[in-house]
Length: 186
Image (cartoon, rainbow, N blue to C red):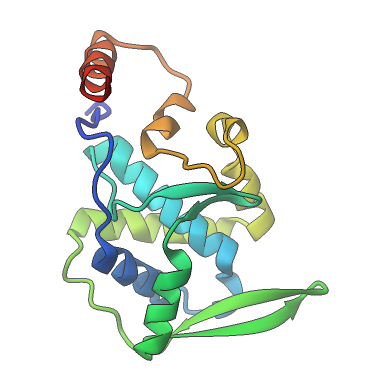
């Protein structure tokens, strides 16, 4: 199966799904010491980017902005505050190599009924790679691709831009898609 070329460049944010995803990620990382803010942000980014590239739509519809350590979900702080207020999540600050690191602890089981089995499988795979095969520094560097480097701090990084960061042959299907999208935004 080939890559799915997304028809809709911008999809609306599904705030409830984003909140459920953050809760699920924190729940799945049984050892809070392996999940800080950088890794949480990267799991969200890669889950949405991979879903966008393979299925034609992100999981959450979230917008990401360039920050020092890579793409960051625009609504992450509000979502974390909501989860804390609902007693679904605790955030603790710990010293880590002379700096303060946030750790996230799920206080109850998340509701994952809004996710498809394929989405859960994708998310679990991303969690495994980010939490168990990377440090915060290495996953941060991995997210600093050509598109991230071109953006300014605070600037939106559209998910479709991630498709341009991959090397590959431009197909006739790619050209047709680009013409359709550019005619809709012109």
